[in-house]
Length: 517
Picture 1 (cartoon, helix red, strand yellow):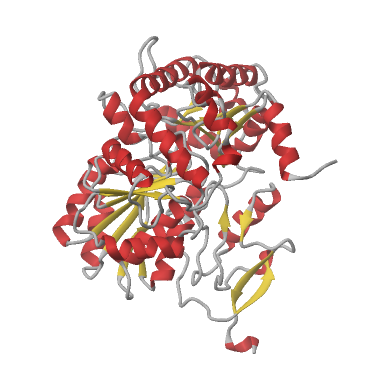
Picture 2: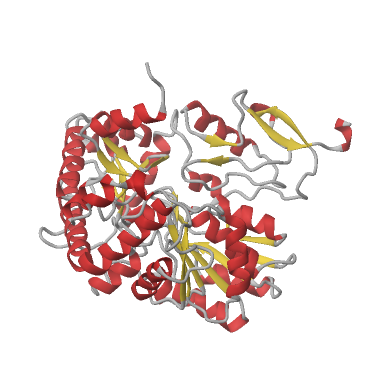
C-alpha cells in the first residue's frame, strides 16, 4: 500500500465524509458555491515569493496592507497582523512583547502549549490560575473574575494576564469583567481566541446575542484568532488584533518576524484575503445559515433519547459536545461509531466527543450527524435508560425555538454524575479530573534522564507532556508526577492517543538529581 501523504489525502477526498473538525471551510464546497473556483484551481501558480508587486508581509504597503485593513474593518481593531505560523506565532510574539525581562504572567492552567512556550522564551514567571470545572460534562469551564481578582491581589507585580476564551470545548470567560480588573491594575490582557474567530463576525451580522461576545468587544488588549479553525482560511493561517493603541507595535513586529518564516506562504495569505472578502460580501447570509443549522441540530438532537449535549450559559454552541453515556458508550466508542459513518469529529475527551462546526458546514452535514446519533440510540447497550436508574433529561428545547442557555436540571445532572462514576471501570479519566490536581512545583531541571512512564511518580517533569489534541499540557517542567497523572497518561497512551513527550519506548524525561550522578 502506498503510504504517501498525497495518496492518503486523495483517498480521503474521494470518500463521502463529513467534517466536524478544523478547518472551518470544510473543503472546496463553500469556495465553489461563492464563486472562488479559480482560487482553488490556481493554487500551484499562486505559490510565489516577494516578487515585484507582491508586497511584503513584514513591511506591508500595498496588497497585504489592503487585506490587513479588511480585517481591521471586520474586527474593529487598531491594527491587525496576518499570521502564517498559526495563532502560535502570534501568541508567543505577544508574550515576548509584553512580558520580557522575567516579569510575572498570570495565565490559565488550561492554556495552549504555545503559551507555556512563550512564557518560557520570554523568561517570564508563570502564575497559574485554574478554570472552573463543569462537573456533569467533565470539562474545564470559564476562568472566573473571582479567580483573576485573587491572583492579581496575590501578585501585584504581574504585568500580563493571558487566558483562552473560548477554550477548546467552547466555554468562554467573562472578558468584560476581567478586562476591567486588568485596566484598573495596569495589566495587559491577552486573549487566546483561537477557537473564536467567528464570534466578532457573528456580532456584526446577527446582533442577536445568542453567542458569547468576542474578546474584541469586551476590552481585551490583544486578541489572537485562528481564522482557519472556523472560517474560510487555510490551516496555519491566523490573525492578531491589537485593540489597545498603547501596545508597542515596533517591538511586536520585531517579535513577529522572529516567530514567523522569512518566506511566508502566499497561499496562506491569499486564503486570508479570500476569507475577508467572503465575510464582507456574504457574511449576512453565511452567518444566518450557520445559526439556522445549529438551531436545527439542537432542536432535533433533543428528541434522541440517551444523547446529551453540553449546555452552559458561557458556551459558544457552535462547538457541539456530545455525550452518549446513557446509552452505554464512552467518548471513544461514540467517536468510533461516528467515524464508521464517515463523520470525523475534532476531539474526544473522557465521555465527550466534540464536533467543531464551521462556516463551511451545510444542512446535510448536520442531518448526517443526527442520523448517526439516531442509529446509536437504536443500539443502546441498555433496553431503557431507567435500567441504570437514570432519569431521562427533560427536553430542553421547545420545537421551533433555540435556547442555548438552558441546562439539565440538578437532579438529572447528579444522576449523570453518578452514572459516570458507576461506569468508571475501564473508562478514562477526563482532562478536568486531572486539571483539579495541584502537583508540587520546583525548579525546572537543567539536566534530564529518561524513565519508564509507569515509574515516573514522584519524579520532576523535565519536558512537557501534551496530549494533542487539545494541546494543553497535562504536566509541565518543574512539576512532580503524581500517581494519578501517571495512571491518566498510561490510560491515554493505551487508547492510542497522540501524546507529545512520551517516547515510542513509553518513556518520559525527568530531572536528573545529584544521586543520579
